[in-house]
Structure formats: C-alpha cells, structure tokens
Length: 258
Image (cartoon, rainbow, N blue to C red; front, side, top):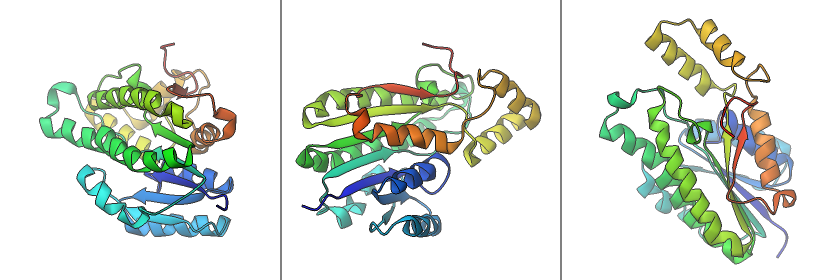
C-alpha cells in the first residue's frame, strides 16, 4: 500500500482545532475535518487544499448528538491508511456555578466529551489496530487537574481523562498511543466569549479580567493556537512514540499543580 497518513481533526473550523489541522497538513497528512458548521468546513478545506493536494475531506457532525456519529462516518468506513491519528477536540463548556447547573447541562457536556470521544475512538481505533499504528490526542484543559471556580461543568473533562488513560492501556500493544493535551488560556474566540460572560457575571471589566489572568501566568501572556498545535503535531510524530497515557500541560505555567 502506498503510504497514506490520515489525520482526523475534530472541532477544526476555529481556534485550536483549526490550528492543529493546518499544522498536520503542513506535515503531509491527509486531513479530515469534523465540525458542525458546513460553511466553515468548506472554507477551512479550501485553505488545506492550497497547502497540498492530499485529498482532504470533511464530515459535518454535531457532538451534542453522539448517537449520530457512527451513521455519519459511513462514508469513510472503507478507508485505509498506513497511519491514522485522531484529534478529539470540542468547544469547552461556558462558565457556570455548580449549584446553577441542571441535569441537561451535565448531559450536554458528557455527550460532547466522553461519549463523542469514545464513539470516534472506537471507529478509528479499529482502523489503527489494523494498521498497527495510531495516535489519539484529546484536547481537554488544565481544569482536569485543578478545578477553577465557575467552571463546574469541566468536571466531565476529568472523567474523559480517566477514560483516555484506560484506553491507552488497552491500545498500547497495537502501537497506538493515547494522550491528553491540556491548554491553558489561549487566544481564541472561545476565550473572548468566556471573558465576556465572566465580566457580565462579576461586573469586572474585560481589561481587568485579562490582566488578572495574565499576571497568574509565569510567562505573562496567553498561548497562541499554533503553540498548542505544535505540541499536538509532536505527539502525532514518531518522535513521541513512547509517550502514552499522559496529561501534557501547555499552559505557560498557569496551573499550580505538579
């Protein structure tokens, strides 16, 4: 078989996900974009096509409906490759105090993270096993190690981290690694939305919130999406072949836990 390297990147029309798709594309991977917004998918695919002609593809999916994932992947059921990698990534939950959360709030985040990541990993993990090579990288966040007040729904990410650890043990013998990348505050539209929400909730200005957050980061700045993407690209490479079952913080020192 001709060497074919396929990278499936979820949440890939904005922010960190898009940066990862572009980074892996530059490394020669055939990219499959997964996201909800059809127009944005078309735009990002056109950007990838300008970088190389590796038959990039996209799948429109809504992670709020994990039961729709398997039927939506029917078009790629017969795909083969010498290397498969899956980047599980989805927009994080917005700020919400724990006593204000309803059952449906937790269920929505549970669907988007644990259930959707599991369904995608089941589908593409079987292909990785046949190829005897694979990479699964889950984009989570430092809240899995250190809770942040007001971000109570992120507890679901901790469950996802435990799931990933178990998965890494099951898949290791097939030369498949599974790791979690934990970004700290990163310059994205999502961060802007979070700052706006917290500002309205607390009455603290955007400028003050940004300043307060930056001063808690030893490197005194937010990350750029490309910096998270570079770390993911490394984990997808042969240079990271002996890293698995790990939580890897990319946060400029923001988290105080070891």
